[in-house]
Amino acid sequence: MRYNFDEVVNRNNTDSRKWGTLEEIYGTTDILPMWVADMDFKSADEIIEALKKRAEHGVFGYTWEQDSFYDSIIKWVKRRHNWNIKKEWILFTPGVVMGLNLGVRELVKEGEKVLIQSPVYPPFYRVIENNNRIVNLNPLKDTGEKFVMDYEDLEQKIDKDTKLMMICNPHNPVGRVWTREELIRLGDICIKNEIVIISDEIHSDFILKGHTHVPLASISKELEERTITLMAPSKTFNIAGLATSVAIIPNEELRNAYEKAIEVMEIGNTTIFGNVGFEAAYNHGEEWLDELLIYIEDNIDYAMEYINRNIPEIKVYRPDGTYLLWLNFRGLNKSPEEINEALIKIGKVGLNEGSPYGKEGEGFFRLNIGCARSILEEGLRRIEKAVKSL
Ligand SMILES: Cc1ncc(COP(=O)(O)O)c(C=O)c1O
Image (cartoon, rainbow, N blue to C red; front, side, top):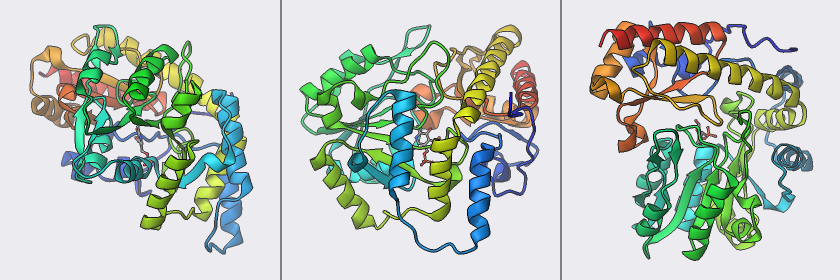
């Protein structure tokens, strides 16, 4: 292995939201943070070097996306996801959540509805509700072995006011990588009902062995025509702070509408470091990522085994992708507040409490295993201590 993911990087006093806001989030600073979805690993050397080199130039004026920017993601998406995309389909967005927000604002009128599949990443709710649009919930089903989509419920929920569906693939927090068959079934329902789909594929580079990421828009011409795909190197290479992502929109009419929303909000400008990080990641980060995926997979194996052996009170399904585990504490018959208090006060470990992900998330907590093994081991011991105290 060329990279040492066992290295523990001290992130205190580095303006890290995950490590720096513990007092605000948990009411105390002596917490091991395993919450917000960024990893504790150093990014790839190639990215760090490219940023350093650019920093040394010393002039950081306005910039724009050049051919090399588009080229880097076109090649990446082809190599990693076997999807041929064109330069003119790609629009820069300053973050994937902004990409969701733009879609809601432009494609849905106030008072109209947007379908989402709960439990889901909380900003999915916020971009709908804060824009005075209405959440139309199509909850995932728990089969006892994994989470699946509920197509019957989806068909029933669609009405004349439902214009857009936002899916998360791979799904945060449940860790499913939706299969081609699942996506085709979902897509058929959306095509039949003329619903546009935003597919948030920010986690698409974290695919575990035995699974394949299928970009929704790559499935058929019909789905290509009604899908806006959001992608970014931010999660993949731990460069979320560079806030550089893209919306891929093959349909010209949809793309023009979306571009108008970007213009109205005057947010179409990339940044120097965003550009450099984006291109270095997609052009030179592959070896780092392949090694990282082995480490993440081992961390998941370790955590699954630890929980099953030592904390059987917690139920957890092995994820197909992402570096997140969706822990089910419901068997304890305690309120989310009681569990959270034990995690914070007894375990001294910070997880994401599940209720912001929707009603279906109550009694669940999200654990981020994107860290050195020693930190994961410590975190699991702390969770165990908290659970045993309940
Ligand atoms: C599904 C999903 N979308 C978007 C984001 C955030 O994207 P960005 O930081 O580019 O806005 C996250 C971060 O956790 C996420 O899990």
